[in-house]
Image (tube, rainbow, N blue to C red):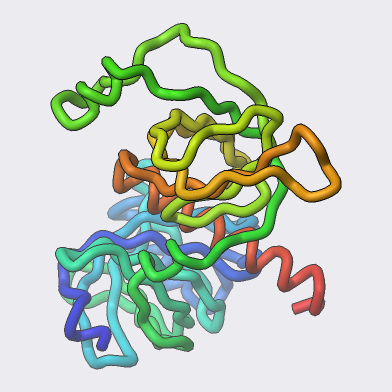
Amino acid sequence: MLSKYVMPGNKLELQAVESELLLDAEEEAVEQEGRQEGEIVGGINTKKVYHTVVYDVLSDERLEIYMPMEKSRLLLLPVDVEYDLFFYTESGLYQCYARVVDRYKNDAAHVLLLELTSNLRKHQRREFYRLNCSFEIEVRSMEKEEEDAMGKRERYLMPGLPFRNGVVVDLSGGGLRFVAKHRYEPNRLICCKIGLLQNDDYKEYTIAAKVIAAKEIENKQGLFEHRVQFVRIHAQDREEIIRYIFEEERRIRKRETGF
């Protein structure tokens, strides 16, 4: 499946499942060579996201990628460390886990040889996985002028309009469920504003959504639960939300199991 969807030249992101040591002593020759063309960086790294490009796809289990760089410096990722990979392909965003099995110089390129430790899967499938959570959301009904302009121009939301507060209780790449004191009617378009912390970076997302269902919570008079579907969201924002769900799910699993 890897060779079917992933091609040389595809951009990818990778992040260590655990903290890694970027440089070890066995690669002195590569290090010296690397310092001539661009310094190779060493040290302990705590789950940093690296950006690079696919060099070659050798089989459905193995591929070569260019060694990541940072400010013209090569980052020598360690052998036997497992990484979480996200491929940006013509068919969409794909994800898998892989382990570095070797590193070497191929012609003039410093490359890493990776071996998959999981199946490749289309990342958007996780849109339908809902992560149980609890964080604040700001919500307001959309104005008719905004609805009319939504499909016609990029900036269709009117600034300065007041929001009401609520609490998100689950989240997916396709929508969310929240509780609020105000009831929004089904089929109504609303504007949702949420903030997510990912890799120590906090980012706010303002997304148009359609109310699928709304009901008053039993034994909690005056509180309403809403299920909404995103109807206008940038592809990058959706991918970041899905990645956030991946990371939160993994963090929760590790906390519960110790692995």
